[in-house]
Each structure stands twice: as C-alpha cells, then as structure tokens.
Image (cartoon, rainbow, N blue to C red; front, side, top):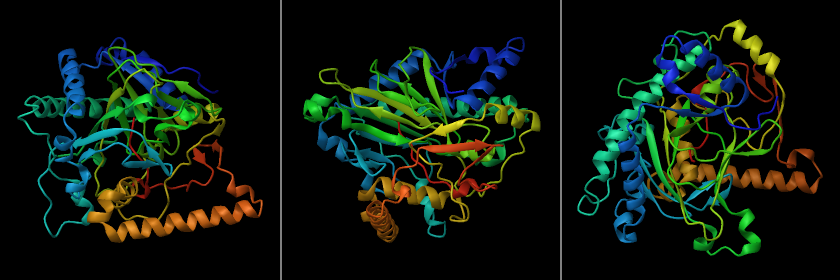
Length: 406
C-alpha cells in the first residue's frame, strides 16, 4: 500500500498510560508503511521554538563577511556556515545556505581516529551582533537531544522491543547535529522562469543515522516525501509540529522493517520569499560497528504483509564490508558533500572520491552508449521478508553513506 498523506501523531498520548497503546499502534503503522510522520505536542516550549526561528532568520540577515567568519572550511569538523551553492546532493548543487551546529565536544587528541575530527566545538556567530543566538540554540539542542532519545525508545516499544533496545548505539556524550537552512526563492536566485522546475533546494536523498526532526520555520511548501509508487507527497508546514524522518541506520538495524523514505526540498516559487527550516539529526556513536536488532516475528510478519514493489529515486546505500566504523563512512560522506572542506583538510579522501566519481561517470557513459539498462537510474526496490534487492542480509551501520538535509 502506497501512502498519499503524512500521518500526524500526538506525542502527548505516548506519555499517558491509557492512550500509549494506541499511540504505539499508530507509530508502528507509520514506521512500516511511510517512514515519515508529523509529531505534535512535542513538549518543546513554544517560546523556545519561536526564539529558534527568530534567531535563525537573524543569522542569515547578517552581513556576508560576518557569516564567512565562521565558514565551514575553517575547521575539519564540518561545523559552521556554508554559503549558497556550496553543498552537493545527487551530483547537483543545492541552492541553499546553512549553518551546521552540534552538541559541544572538545577538540580531539592527536591519537584519536581521524573521524573524531567530527567531534569538535561549534563555530558561533559574533555575539556582538547576535547575543541570544548561542544560548537559544544550545538550549534547543539539549531539549531536542532528550526528545530524540525518548522517541527512539517509543520506536523500540512499537516494534515490541524493550525501550532501551537502541541505547547501546549511543555514546554517553552523544553528538547530535542541527542545521539552520535558508532556501531562497527562484527570483532571488535569478533563475529564468522556464528553468525553475529543475532547481533543487536539496536533491532527493535519505537521511542517515536513526531519526531526524524538522522544524519548518516558515509557511512555505517545499518538503516532499516519495511514496512507494514514486509520487512526491507534500509535507505542508503544520504549526506546532515537527516532521520526523526515519533514517537508513534505523532501516538497517531493523532489517528493513522501518522504512527510510526518500525526500527532497524545492526552492520557493518566484516572489514567495525564502523558506527557512531547522532540521535536528539524532546522532549515533562514530565508533560503532552495528549489528541488527532482533525484531520479533510478529512485527516482521506485519512487514511482510505490507511489502510492496517500491519505486525510489535513491538507492539504499549501506555497503557491506566497506567501512570499519560509522565515523569513517560519515567522514567520507561529509567530504563528498563539502569538497571545499575536503580540499583544505582531507585532500587524500577527496582525491579518492573524485576518482570514484570519474569512474562512475565513465561507466555510466559506456553503458548508455551500449544501450545497457543499468545506465538508467534504478527506480524499483523490492522488499521481501525485510530484505531489499542489493542489500546484504546482515547489515552494519558502519557501512552507511547518506546525507542530511531538509
């Protein structure tokens, strides 16, 4: 069954013993059939939400030179500001600007693995210009960290697992990430009217890790999820909600029971003004080499009954045996998405990425000239007994490459 709307779940029902069973039933259905959902009554104070929106918009109103003081390529952590058109998804430039933040960590030591560079202090805008920005976002990250761990425990219960089933995959001081994103409208980008349909705010992708939580900080449409038939379904902003996306990590850990859903963002139409969003990405230990959790047979049977042929613009990207730790895959992926950071801090990794990309382009060109069907982007992904075509029967989260953006 292919979904045609995004379910809305009231999180307050999960905090009441009388309504929690019904909530878990609804959550289970969303996990098995959709992989995308709204949650309302999150417990995050509305005043804080409005402060997050206000401070986020104020950041983008800063003079360019102030934003560039904290540009991402200043540090090897992939934290900081990215100017318009500085990130790549699905081999195309994303037309957005953003700042990446995370839960704070000290600088790694010289003996730590290279991927521990991802665990670093944030780059904050000048407090002379934005004195409330840092305290507001540090508070929001703290509260969202608690919410994400709570929601993951509910996912476990919805799968008939103990609420602590995923706890072993988190560090004690787990890093979670957050982006503040501005998507300019077509007119601001200077795109001709006859080309605006080809403009991507961020291209089709699936989130990494376990779960992400999107605050749609303006009233613009733009976020779309792809259903099992390959159709794009609008995720219209709804006041008082967060949009939850299931990541590829959770799909792998649950052996295909939970669905990671392809989604994209379109830039606002001409004259509509900029779209703003604040996605929060639940982290997982970079040192992890994961095994699947044992989802009960009753839940797997439900998943088998729900199995459909799946049209998908993004292939499931776990690759067995490629990486030793999740952090290695994440570092590779961030370098691929942010080549300016790679050029400065990870030239050897970037060189390998570019060689791989050139090889892929050459192979696709050769296949196309030979009329090989493999040159056509894959659309179908069949789910049978929790397994996907081309997906190994045993998955390790450390074998993951994916991106994060809303």
